[in-house]
Length: 137
Image 1 (cartoon, rainbow, N blue to C red):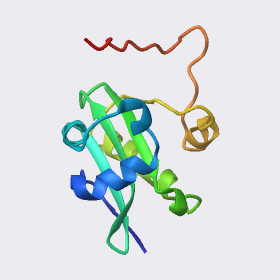
Image 2: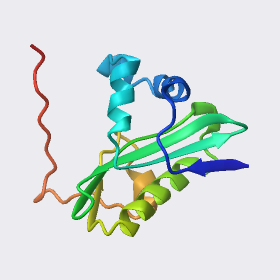
Image 3: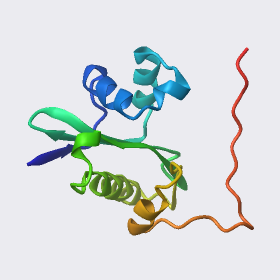
Image 4: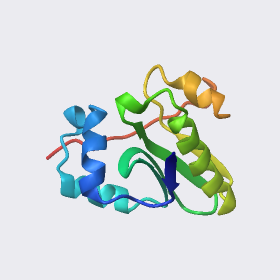
């Protein structure tokens, strides 16, 4: 049985899950930086199976108006079991329980249908989402 805990996991458990996503090939973060990042989450949920961390999701929020979901991840060998859907449902429940008005997320290319099944809708072209990333240096 999968156990869900509304908490940020220990970095020693999280690091292998994070590396399994391949995201660090782009971000090139060290474990200490990743630990600080997830530690600053407003809401989090960790999925464990037989004591092993197999999934995680988090949101950053002002805890009133807005929250943004980041880092929904499930170990590749555990996908297809509904874990990701439960992680997203859990985070949105936590946001709703806190009274957060609007929940947003960043989706990887091709994952839109997954999030649509959880009730998320793409922003219309007249309301584009945008981002700014500071240059190194």
